[in-house]
Amino acid sequence: MDRLEQPFDVHSDHQIPAGEYVYTRFWLTTETAETRIISARISVGHGQYYHGQRSGLNGFLTFKPNGHFSLESSYSLNCVKLPNGSFNANVIGGRLVCSLSTSAYAKLFVQWNNESERLSTNLLLNYIYQPGSNFYLVLNQIYNRAQGQRLVDRAILAKLTYWYQ
Image 1 (tube, rainbow, N blue to C red):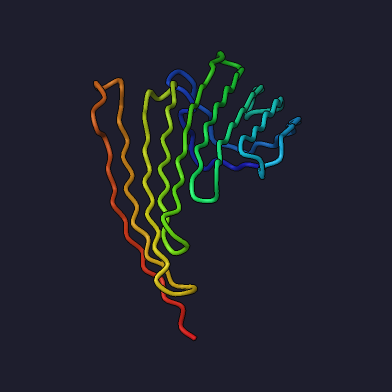
Image 2 (image 1 turned 90 degrees about the vertical axis):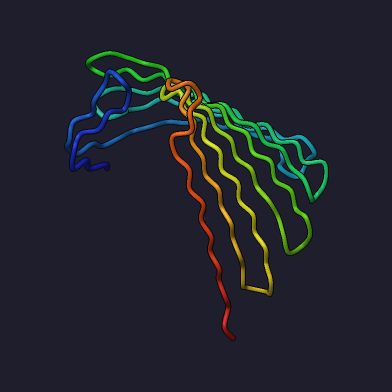
């Protein structure tokens, strides 16, 4: 069950009103073993979406030549039908993971959403300076194509954890 305290715009022309919503969804997924150099997963589904219906297709492809490097791609298509109209949302993503050593790695995630015309990037650097203790540095950026690929948001975050024994 989903309870919305206030309405929100799910699409430029469609607003979901406040209220309680119950969903029934069905998904069928098949995948190859993730231990292979190249692995894949595909899912198809259909079900309720607020006062309408949603059908979806998700695909993932991963290239992992060794334990230090992986490249992942993803695609999602959601076909949404609401009482006041319908729309399709396409989301394309990619992730690059590089393990520099047993105590340091970097992850880069990039995502394009055709509906919002936004490109989001997320860079995560992690350093394990002792077992159970980490330093994280994160850079998030969002670009809006509707505004000429203009940078609309940027955040830099740092986190330090220490495990006291």
